[in-house]
Length: 242
Image (cartoon, rainbow, N blue to C red; front, side):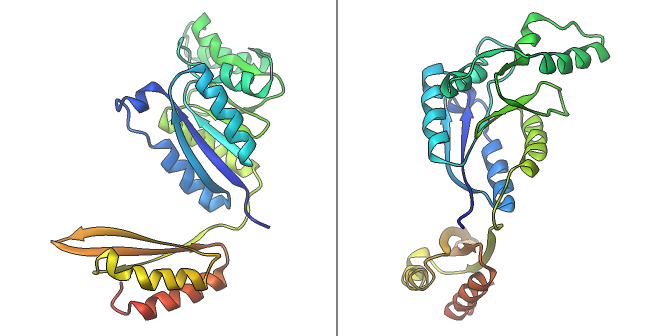
């Protein structure tokens, strides 16, 4: 059986403006590989309700899982929960379990539990909370959509708690070989190898090192026998590789 598929939706004007460097998709994609979930698409959208709704509907229908990052904080432009609820046809309101988590968090810090902070307890009906061990405000899973914070350390903590609950497939195995050849000079051999191993992903990634052109040859797959066989042929084709 093929591995489950996933898409990642990054939400935030600050990403599109270049103000904030995006790293959550990079982190999650690596975690999905280890879990045996194949990431098929990464998309970045602005803080625009209609755009988010359309993206959630499209990506959740096309993949087994959709992971979102950003837009679940206390401010007026944090609209991800509203948009996901609309996209999935669910009612959104303050939920008592989420409210209790936040109330306890702020009480322990002798901090006022304001109306703005209460916004973070708005959870769609039928959703399951995603724990936030860093700042308490929970994310949620609604159907196959998993909604998480945009702050990197909070996002990573949420991912760490969420992924073990999801059913994955065979982990992706990756092998690489570095050759000091231009990418154009390895293309024919790689094309032939890819034809012999259609179930493997074979890529080439050029670089320049001390003024010399080189290429990283990367072979990926879930079947260790095929990966080993393909990599052995790769080494035979490029015996100077390291």
